[in-house]
Length: 130
Picture 1 (cartoon, rainbow, N blue to C red):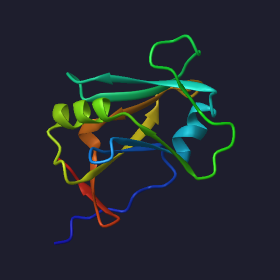
Picture 2: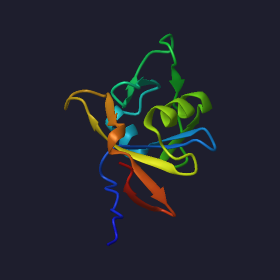
Picture 3: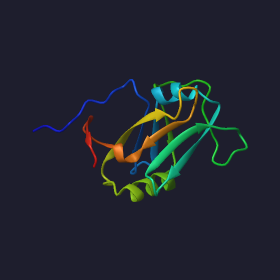
Picture 4: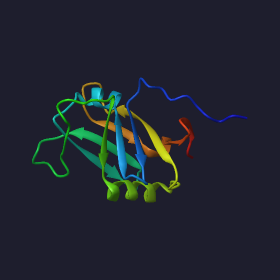
């Protein structure tokens, strides 16, 4: 039985790769956030919850989104954060993990990711991690 599933490209998404320390924020996530000038990550290791929300330049952990994105996603490197996420989730270090997200409320620009919904990426195909 093939347990691979098809990724729904209409939902917000994020992926994590520990080898590169890369977090990839999908275009659908950027759209849900309203393409903010600055954003920061939120992580609750106890709840395996990860979030992204718009913020101000003076807020802790603020990251600036480039004015002109050349791709349909935005990559940011944060080796320490990615290692912490992998360790907290018990993920396999050789894999990339993709996680679907949701907006917390229809009028909100915060995007929430339940890391228990993570999908392992195998040669471009995804399957449940848990």
